[in-house]
View 1 (tube, rainbow over the protein chains, first blue to last red):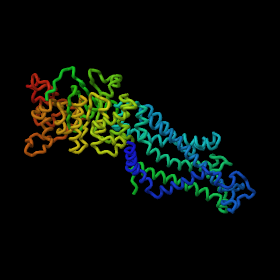
View 2: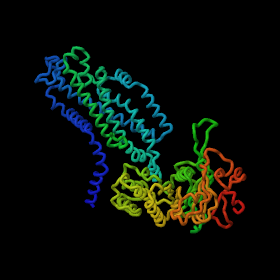
View 3: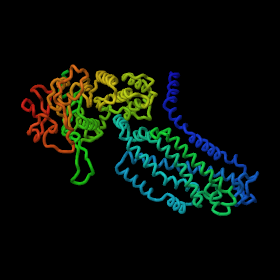
View 4: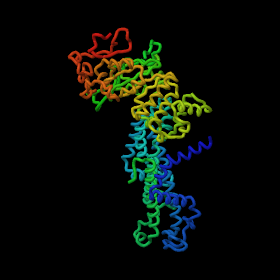
Length: 294
Length: 333
């Protein structure tokens, strides 16, 4: 019995899951993305051990060029750029994942409800989506950041609460198709409750596009956070963020003569966004065979 | 194959059922309706198989979905064991007693669930199995539809069409229903598998005392499995009778044409072809005053254009064979 069960399990992995997994790893870009992401997560977790210097400690050398002591130099008020860069990865990933988590939770729930129940529920939720979508997101965030106390939590909650609209639409559309399928009819005839049909029959079938979309969303959010911090409305100094590190480069002297202050942060931002997008693409290929790669 | 019947064995009674669908943009005064099912009455008796045939778009599936409760009748009533199904409470109480097997076996099974949970969950929800014996019951169900035990770990995508349809049948019978509406259950399968699934359905009928409403667009399968056959045309039944009556002396011109249109494998037994329909089916949107078959019927007369023929018994004393055509009006009772 036990042996038979294991044979089943291995066979299952070989056939169904294996195909998905091999599709996921087929592209070199996906692996590249995964490696970068792994490194970023590693950096964020072990930030205190990896960065030799305190990111908040001000040395007496202001805007010093890279040296043995400060590998990427120091910023305009004498803090070690490398440690700030590493600590900023923490902030970016927290904002990216936190925001996406809130957006997915809200978007998934509202999308499921709108798609399944239709009628007045659908109208109310979708009009709310329309209203939120008419505002340019950047402006909305600026206003909220202006009203509320700017900071990490504010950023996460604000971006999370306005970023769910596209996800809700995506989920609703999928639910509309799925709820007409025969297995949902069969579930109705078998006496399943509405809650059970929605969450155990329909929801698992919309998770694939949601997961793909969420991955892309993390990348988008990190850029938005960086832009806000660049404008001074996001993460507040002294907390380091790639965005507020870049804001140093607003001065022409820094831009032209102190590249160690802005190149590393830009490169990190670029790498992170690219990595998330590559992983997202890989996931899309693995989960949705209809978008076959060329 | 005479099915003895009296009213106590009546399982499902459909009375003057009409179901229409609005078409086009709903603007006041201009709304058009398609009559998918038009004033249809039908009785299904306990333990029989009623075959329902008709060309595409004649309303077979609408009728099936209405019986199963996914569409509400526009007019008319459906009685199940004498209870009026239009009441929500009644419908809920006998929800599991009417099950359906669909044509598309793939979309009938949740692709994210394995066969075990597809079969076990309905049992658990309806308290037909306890935690201890649920696995045993699932294996038994699989066995009764001829699938091996180790299929429980598989996902629908790994099964062939015939196997999936077997799982669908297993799920349908798991809740001990009285009526199973089979909406073209074998049409998407290849011929040898069709035969296996039909045999399975016939065996299960004997074992569990099931009643089938068997919908098909072709005649071969229906002849094999049905006790009685109803021929449907544009939302109404034009002829109904025992399988033998329909195949040996069909009366309605449409039934005749329908029989002629289905190919016979052996050329020796090929029917003499004399009544083939050339015209397309009448537009379901147009309301016709007379017989709906008027435009395509080679026997039609002026009388047919004005009046609607009623479904009437063909012989006095014979309560099985009925036909709706003016050609036979003088013998009809």
